Image 1 (cartoon, rainbow, N blue to C red):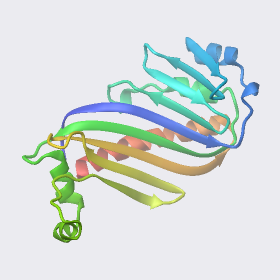
Image 2: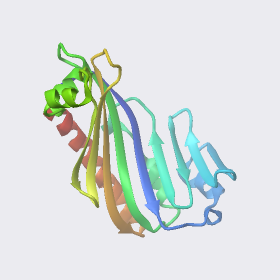
Image 3: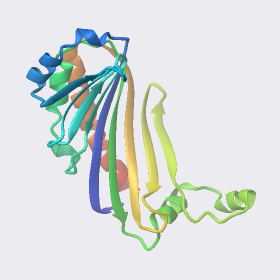
Length: 207
């Protein structure tokens, strides 16, 4: 499937790790090493927040989770997430799992609405379904898991509006892995991001 006027939305990368005391992390070191204008500690949330509003990215560090978000709107392959890698170089977390999330919207080249397109391509036994629940299925959204529980891809397809032809597709790569070394974590993340972008492109074209 070819998406018309695709909108490349957020890139999110999430790490889960063993409990880590945030007081061991220096806000000044983050500001200096990552070269970020904004770094604060939110005591109520027990969260360190670093970011750059102008360049549309931010990161939050909690005692068991780090999340990085890039909210720019240009192609995924052109996103520069070196700020994340600099952040990871500061502290050695005992990583248990991580995920890469990509989101895109675009119009479908079809006379149907996006909801109808998803319905006709993913919903099996439509007549049986409609009879069972006593109603016409005029739109549909779905979620698919591929792989194994410890290493999978989570795909979500849904219409942006019920009567329009714009579809949103969310891609999530999950990987259970034990990593302590920062250099290894950075390399593994780079490989996972590169794989996810290429894999997501193949999935969209295969629809």
